[in-house]
Image (tube, rainbow, N blue to C red; front, side, top):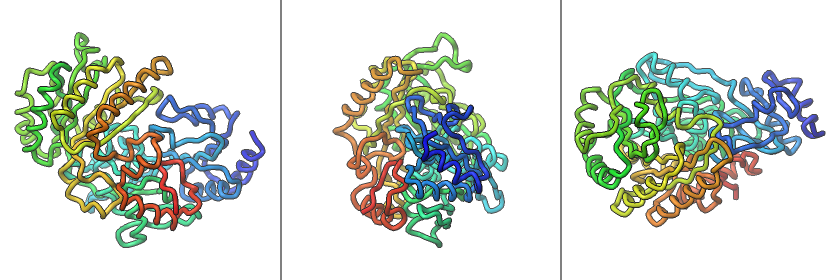
Length: 461
């Protein structure tokens, strides 16, 4: 260990209840891993916190030593912002507390909770809050960036269902952020990411969902993409907000639930989640199923927790991921032709890209009520190049860059949680100029020294 690491470890040892992991410790290489296998960084110290006191202690040592700070909840940051080289990694994974109030229909979740863990507890009472699409994603990072997922068109984003949050500021103060307390901070953490502090606990509003819902993927041959997407564009103009869909281009993965003769087949997929009755879901989705005979139809009644996990096999820990994303207003003929062409250009069994349907309850929230910057977008494209390791990774990165570039003339913004390291202009475009300037003012108030800069960073004035 370096002198600085030793000093930081000694300073924390006296009043730290969690685990302190340093280079050379037997668990260090395992503990420093994040979800994206292409990120290989070596923190000087990993502080595995058990609560707010541990976080405050770690922050105090970081301020005193000058070590940079990374914060990790689920570790799903595509560009690797949830770890660092040579700094203190504040790891929240041990903070797993969840408390559901089925009468008030609320849930409190600590910052280390994963989406699947929260769903498991809330579904015990037939309740859920809108969250993401991969169950091992962290609640914290997903929520702070906005939180898109399968319930968003009916119930809004994760941030639209956030009631309050406990936040530790750069100075180590623990404050509550809600509509009634520190309202400016509450506005900022709903979309502004981890720029303003470390959230230790979230309180969410819950809604009746499931436990059985209607949803899943329907697959057609990839060459059907142009016609299917034109049909899809017209069909979704008349569907209720109970339905959230996405279109995905990929090769069929070799899952046990899929006939072996279909494995590796290039397909265009429509994925659906109907957040109402199963009977209504069957009726609403029926016209899509009648478009043309599908290769495979897995859009059926199923437990909500199973639908939430349907992307898990495609995005496991340890693979190498590279992403570029953008929003579009509508699926014009030009956009559809680009989408189909980029699907046909996929040459990896692991690479894919979803196009998420937005609108509904998302666009029903006033744009200035939260820091989320994409309320008026129609769809989010998320090009994800994936390999098992370094072999072929640069080729997939190029496919992503080429795909994003082809769509660039039609872009209308970007979802901040889908940004890579793309610079200040792209961060500004994620929020829009007015919101971005307001975020800079808030950053100046809560973190003028930019201690929390390993994120989609809003620099203070």
